[in-house]
Length: 390
Image (cartoon, rainbow, N blue to C red; front, side, top):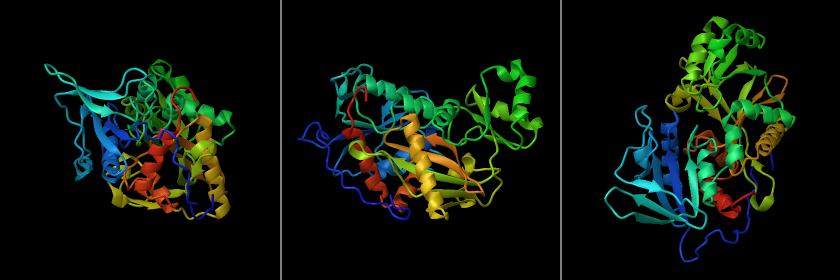
């Protein structure tokens, strides 16, 4: 791929992309969920619902409430936008949506007490716009695999590895990718053997970043400039996950790169990289508020102002990270670029934020694939790949 432009792709329509040639493929847009990132997932869905090609796809929005109820959701994109700093949420509803539960069945049903179950239609692909545990971590992917339902994004293992920063880093290291120094505080260790843990943490030096091992959107993340602040940081992280990751601070620019799966067995594609800089407000780093509620405090540049050879290295590292975890469909890879131009992988996100203003679609737009075309490409990638083991 060129450093400064994205070569347009023209892969043929895969055989069987629309299992029933008499109708358009039906896409279930699945969003919400039980994690702390519920509202971000809902906002992401609003972006997708507003841009998906209705002439090409039949769309069935399905929301998951914060307590886990699956419901038929409003198909109004504006209903799910972040408004006045408040993230939206999926409300409860009388009926419960049930996806196919066995191979060979593709019917999506609504079950309501005292009524005959109704059929919403056959599902051809699920677009799971779920962030965090109970959706991005392989759980929903496993449910869909049991019924041979195609879906957008990574499979069970890649989703689970991408969600758990501990095992993610182990996989990256095993594939020879450059990573920063870290330690893990396992469930119960902070209270049971605090002095030993503090000794391990102190060896990393300061500053430190303390974060839940299995959460995203910077929820529960703290910057620690003194070991005296460790207890509060661990407590904040444990609110989201009993397993805590402690990372040594890295000097450098925070750069992101979007990766898109290859068509017909081709290698994954990497976008032009983008850069995030927190330029205002009371933020120690690119935290939840800066990401979603205080856009004026953040400067997003795409493409990032980097030499061509550094862009090439970022793109290659991003593709290698995608391949290392066995990702499919899409992922965003976050790296640091030091003053010496060394690229260090921070993490991979197998279901990145996907509103029109999120970095993943913005990087692809800068690389030649506008938001609606990107949604179409991801659905086609899902329809193209086989069900079962692959």
